[in-house]
Image (spheres, rainbow, N blue to C red):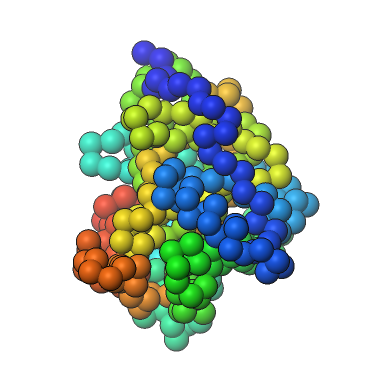
Length: 322
C-alpha cells in the first residue's frame, strides 16, 4: 500500500517573491516581471512581505482548528448551502470522475451578498456557526486582507502581460471569491496511494492565495510529471494560477496540478482564498492576444464557468441539498 510516490525538489524550484513593491508602488515593474515568468513557467510561487497580519493568521488558524474539533452534529448545523457557503464534511468533494472522495473538511465563506442580490448561483449569504460567535469577525478580517493580496498579484499579472494594471480588476465590487478553512486529518499510510486529502487537480477559478501551516502536505506536479512537495516557508503565502486565469491569459499562465497528502500524523489546517471577480465578468482571452494572435477559447462569464465546474466537483450540488 503506502502513500502516492513523490520526489524531493530543489528548494529554489518555486521562488519566493517579495511583493512589498506592489503594496507601496515603488518598483512594480520588476515584481510584475518576476510574477509573470513564474506564472508562465511553474504556476506556483511564494510571496513574502504580503501584508496579511501574522497575528490575524494565527488567530484564524486557532479558530479554525477549534471549529473542526467540534462534534459532527454541531458542524452540520451550518452545512454548505447552494451558494457554496458553510461546512463541507469529509467525502463531500471529488476532484475528478473516478477519484475517491477527498478526506478534507472545509468551512467556506465569502462576500456577503445583500438579499436583493441573491438571485443567481454563488451569490448568497454566509453561514456563521452559533456555536462559535468569535469566528465571524476573525474570518471576515482575513478575507479582506487576503483579497487585497490577490488584487496586488492580479495587477502584477496584468502588468507582466503588458496590459493596464486594472485589466483583470475592472469588476470586483461583488466578487465570487470564496475563502475556506480547510482541515486535513492525519492520513494513515495504510489507506493506500489513491486516497488524498485533496486529489490531484487544478484550481477552478482565477487565482488562489494559500496560507499553509507548518505541517506541510501540499505537492505540486512539475513539467516532467513528478510530484514534489511545496514545503511551508514561514512568513510567506503560496499563490497559484487557476484555470480561469490560464484561460484569460490565452494560455500564457500555467494552471498547475497539485494535491495534498497529510503524511505528518498531525492535524493540518490551511487558510485558502480563491479569488474570482463578479459573476458577469467576461473571461475573454482576446484581452491578452498580441497582433495576429487568435484566442484559444471563447469568452465566458466568470459565474457561468464556476457554476459548471462546481456541479462536477461537489456532491451536494446534485443531491437536492439546500
